[in-house]
Image 1 (cartoon, rainbow, N blue to C red):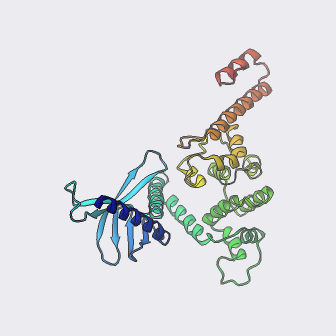
Image 2: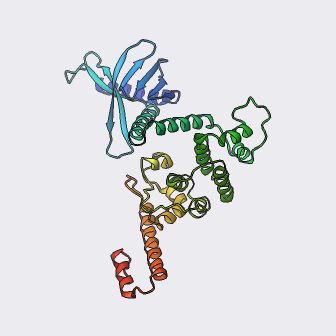
Image 3: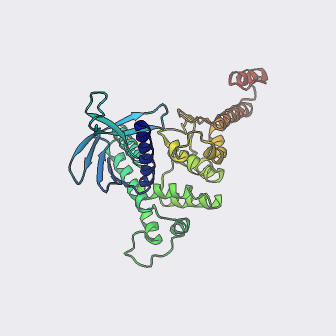
Length: 338
C-alpha cells in the first residue's frame, strides 16, 4: 500500500509539473539562459561555466549536458541534494532534468557559443562581430510580418525620422549595414506565402543595396525557401556564375533549423525538393547529416543521376570526338549503367 501511494504521488506530481511547465518564462543573454521556475524563483544558467545561479538566494549548482544517441538530441541536468532517507547510492547529490523549454534553450545557447568560438578560430574576430550584429537585427525584426517586409522593399517613405524600424529607415539603413542585408535576405526567403517572383525581386533589391551573394546564400535559399525561382537569381543571374561544385548543403546543423527537431525530415524535404535537385545536379552534395528520411535519400539519388546526365551532355557537346563506348563506361562508373 505504501509503495502504491508513493507511485500515485509521483504520478500526480508529474502531472502538476506538466501544467506548470507551460508558465515557464525563458530568455537568453549571451552564453546564459534565464528562466523563472514554477516556484517563482529566477535561475541563470551559464553554458560556458556549466553553473546554475539562483538569483534570489545566490546558491550555485553544477550543470551537466549528456549527448543522446542522435546528433540532434541532448539532455540537460543540474545537481540537487538528495532527500533524507533516500540516499540509496551513498551520494549526497542527484541529477535533475530541466523542463523541456529550458533544455531547448540551453542546447541552442550551447551550440551558438560553440559555433561562435569555431568561427572566431577560423575567420577571426570580425566574423564574430558580424554574427553578433546579425543576431541583434534578428531580434529587432522578429515581429515583422510579410506586409511590413513588402514596405521595406518598396521603400515606403518614413512618417517619422525617429522610428528606427519603419520601412523607409530600414531601406536606407540596408545600404550601409551588412548585417541588416543578411537578415532581410533570410526574412524574404521565409515568405512562403509570397509569389516566387516577389521573393526573387526581394533578392535583386538586396543585391542593389550591396549584398554580396555567395555559396552560403545558395544554401540558405535552398533550405529556407526551396523554390527554383529565387535560386535562379543566384545561379543564373550572377556574373561570374556561382560555382556550387562540392558545396555541402546540410552543414553546421543548419538542417535542424529547418526541420524544427523533426529528424525524419519529410515535410521540409518535400518543400525543398526542387532546389535540392537543382544543386545536386550541379555537383553539390548533402554532406554529413543525421536525418533519417527515405525521401531525402531518393532526392539524393535523383540528383546524382541528373549530375551524371549533365556531365555526359557536356562531354558530348564539348568533346564530340569522345567515343560512345567511353561515355558508356563513364556512365557505368558513375552508377548510371544502362
